[in-house]
Length: 308
Image (cartoon, rainbow, N blue to C red; front, top):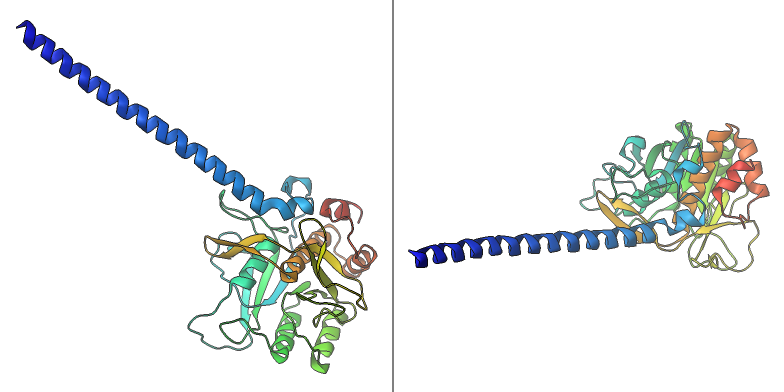
């Protein structure tokens, strides 16, 4: 009898001990997973936010301006409109080619929109500059590789003009200009549209078109130490230089990537223009002001906005 009781007690103790071990293991796993997630979140935050910190917008509460009421035409590759970060900002989409391509890389235009207007819906999402702007996507590329022809760029800009946009962001370009491109740029400027264009990657003593044209805001890129990446050398006009390396943005639904180049610096500048227009709805004054601070040696957008 005593032996049976001892056996039962041992079994009971064994069961309790086993349960305790399982609980301990579960607790350890939870703690490990929690610590792992914290580490990943810190890494993601550090990787994503460096450029926002560089321009003084790491905390959105620092400025009351969000670009509300401002319409930006993104003349680019087309976009993935279903991404949560800016799906509510898209008010229209166009394609100058009207081709049905089985696979087309639209990550470039998607990343541009993310930088301009990204608003994270969860802790994975990316943050942009002007979360309340309206975006019109105009696809001017003619194949799966995102190549742009000068004539298609002209047609895309004309579409933007016809839609009465406030800003045209052009993060594509041509190595040579044309009479048609110059004329449509002049037409947009005469209609009081602000044009922001990437100066071009790997450029030395020259700019891409339409960035090279007069009264177009040309934007170059800097590395994390503030050194010029492109364009280098001497050019015939002033350049606004903004961060242009490892700019993490959204490139598809729940897809993110680090982006390099003046394309993404230009998107930041378009976001800044939208914030300035939100503060004062006067495009001529905004353009004049940006020409006065066009070197942006102080890249703190809060300071730039407050001084306007």
